[in-house]
Image (cartoon, rainbow, N blue to C red; front, side, top):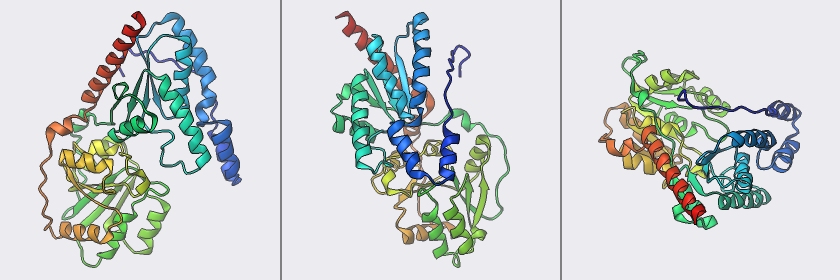
Length: 362
């Protein structure tokens, strides 16, 4: 963060300990009622009065050209509606995840409330940023937002991550396939574990390296099927060390095992692009991850449900007979550098600010 950046802090109640207690008593319905009704759209809504008080104080002394609100938590976007009532300052909403069309919403009533909330927020904003091209198109289609009012800016990578740290983490004589990042709930490593289990008596050289946390289900599957020989489970490690583990691997593993997350792009995808190692993407056909890997030419993808196909690829890797040409498109990869993404953000904010200023003069 530049030294010229001014950070204002406000008070907020930490409600996590309350939820932990309620979960401990298995009062899950009560937690959901609190979260989806009393604290709709999320528990950070209780922070808004403190944020508004602070913002009033700031706006008394500052006259910003534009305001950028980023979420989740999505309740923060309520500030856009409030700010449009009390100021003439253009407001841009940055949605790092969708609200109503979030894949975790299955309750119809909650979806309707979320839809109406999102619609109200979107139409109050002067500009909108989605985190993927798919979500940009979804907002245009589902809410009727004009195309000139919205853009998409994905996550990206930091070029400084290319600086070597000289960490020796090779395993002699082994082909290392590394996954960086934690698994949780129904986002797990089972697609690759099941494939390894199918061929465990036919392969000898592969090691699956997991940096981050596996799920209980993953760990149980490894234990029940005696797969420890093929697993190096390192758990959490610092970011710079994780980078070097990735860069010293032979392949990088990217798993999106939940088909409902077809258009979610894990943040590590963009870091993988600069490690100069082939990516094995176990992702659903037509997903946003497939688009990134294909356009950057940084790997290949297999549907996570095609266990036999995954197993066959792993056998070829084990025997060093996989026919795959690794030829990254460096110009396409550069589009995801944080420098270029920040430039795209600046250009969009300037566009919205200039358009708003013109409208005010009119």
